[in-house]
Image 1: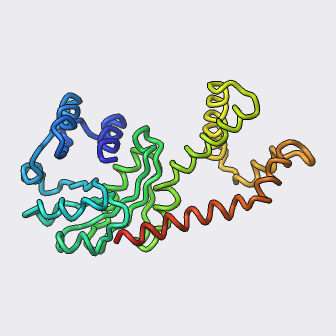
Image 2: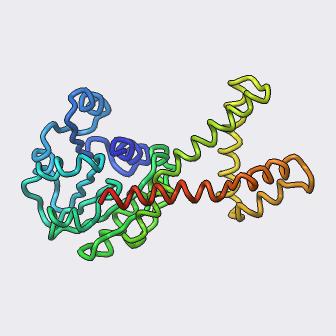
Image 3: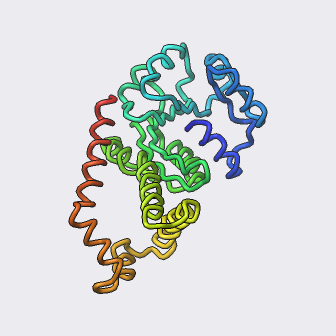
Length: 255
C-alpha cells in the first residue's frame, strides 16, 4: 500500500519520485523502486536521517510487523509528522515511540493507486491545523480524503478500508453467475465489471441517493424487482452488515 501511495503521489504530480524516500528489507523491491527514480534505502535510520525537519514519515507495514519496525527507529526530530496507515494500530501505541510528534492515522484503500481512493485521517492533539491540512491535501490527490475522530477508524476500516475486496467479490459473483446462465466467460466478466464501474460513477457524478437510482431501475413486477426480492429474502443487507461488523471487530483486536 505504501508503494501504491508513492506511485499515486507521483502520478498526481504532488511529488517527484526522487523526493520520496522508500525503505524496504527486500533488495529486489528496492531495485524495482529505484528504477522508477524513487530514493531507496535498505537502512531505516539512513532514510530518517535525511528527512527534513518539516518532513513526513509514512509508516506502511502490516500490523503484525509494526513492533519490529518501531524498534529500528532510534531518534526522530519532533517536528516530523508521523503518518501511519497500519490498520488497527492506535495513536496511543505510536505515541509510546513518538511522544512529542504530531501523529496522523490514515485509513486509505487500494483505489488510491489510480487516484480513486477513499481515505480518512485521524490526527492527535499535537497536530497543528496546517499539518492536518498538509496531509489531507496529499491524500486528496489520491481521491476522497476526510478528517474524523480516531474512535471512528475501526468502522472506517470495515467500510472503505476493506471495502474494495467486497466490490471485487461482487464482480466475481456476478461474472460467475453470468457464466452459469449461459454467457461466455470473458463477456460475463466485461459486463459485470462495467456494470459495477458505471453504477458507481452514476452515483458519484449525479449526486443522487443510491436508493433513488435503484428505484429508477426497478419496474413493477419486472426482472430487476424479481432479483431484488431474492436478495431481500436472503437477507442481503444483513449479510453486508455482519461482514462489516466482523471486519470492525478484527480491527479492534489488532490494537
